[in-house]
Image (cartoon, rainbow, N blue to C red; front, side, top):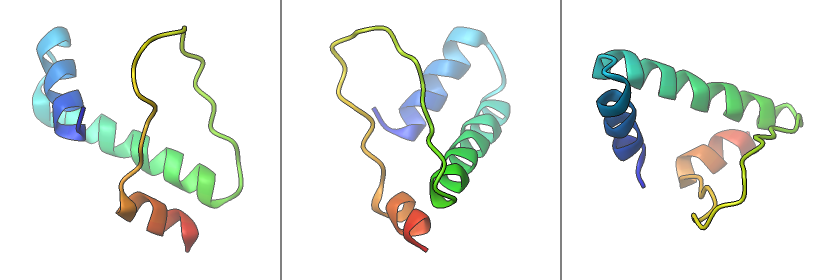
Length: 66
């Protein structure tokens, strides 16, 4: 699932404007990147499921490595 897929699904299921959802998802990713870049752990408690793990984009990894 891509970021665009996530945005579309959240907008569809919540009926929140897609522009607002994009802003929230982008800010979420920024907070996670900043946290990891500063050596902080980012933990999400998610019930057991059969979904592939989050795979960050190369640009995400590059920003953390700075």
